[in-house]
Length: 483
Image (cartoon, rainbow, N blue to C red):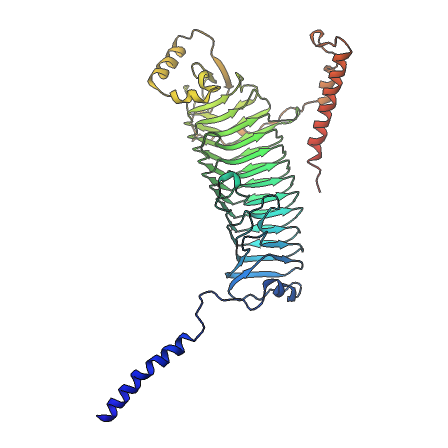
């Protein structure tokens, strides 16, 4: 009994000592701390080998100047600590994958980014890039593969964010299966022959934006809840196919926009629930070029096709315009009939198909009556569909007191959106006539009398205008010099 009491007392007396021993141990940390800087590890790794990374947080900035493999295996974070760009690729053939890259600086001038790419033939795969001003920025970087990355920008207002992906003078790259969200744009500048496919973008300004670029392919992407889905500017020879664009809302919401572009092929896309499905502005730009809009579904938008002015040489065939509030709008009292409209489906078509060939028996004419009030004044849309305007519009159609404005005529409207003929090759095919610019120039040499020069001042003004036009054409062509 005495022994048991002594043992118990000894145990209780030892508790303070045990407590002090436990408190003196190093504090446990959930995240491993690297024993060497990432920059040193990269410099110690031979060319072509994998950098050995322990799980944990490494700090940037980091510069890679040799072809190595940087694989975080989903357990490594590179933290830029809010200063500059986190990772800079200066060597060709680098592999960066399975990393978390976070916390770049805030400078737009310095293009603070998660990854700066200044080299070619790199592979950037399956990384999560977050809280970086720009996500991945390529400058004069060619034949890279950017695949499977999740990219978001800083928590800022839309215009002050950086671009999720930006390509500048970068050719023949592949951007595939990336998720770009809560950023500003994905923008391709002065860059040719790139492939953008199977990406998803949301909560951005422009999910995809082209400037002065040619020969690019955009396919099988999904863009939703952005201000603009796809916008093509000052570019040519771009193919946009099999994409889905939805919920591009707001006063400037556009599904697919075209501004001063040529030889665009836009086909098999779905554009739904947008303010404007298509937007056209000075396109085609060159007088001997066309744009081809085929086999698209444009449904449930406020406006199906919005033209900034009277345009021509857009080939619009085999599309389905389904339940848009307005099928087409043309600003500035213009018309859309100078484009080719043929073989499209219009949900407001009021004809029949008695011979069951898939086409309506009568032409489709889109005339506007009272609708002209809101064609040029967005504020008037407040009264769209109200009982008073509906009655007035109906009366104007039944007993017009003035000639309606005819926006377009389709001589072969398709009767049903499910008709096999709608997307058939026979309905979609069209070979546009070749425009002989030399002949047009010769015919234009004889100026009508009302435009004839009436003095030296007029001749000088004409020479200045000609010089400006030549400079504009030279600048336009310069942007498309291919590598």
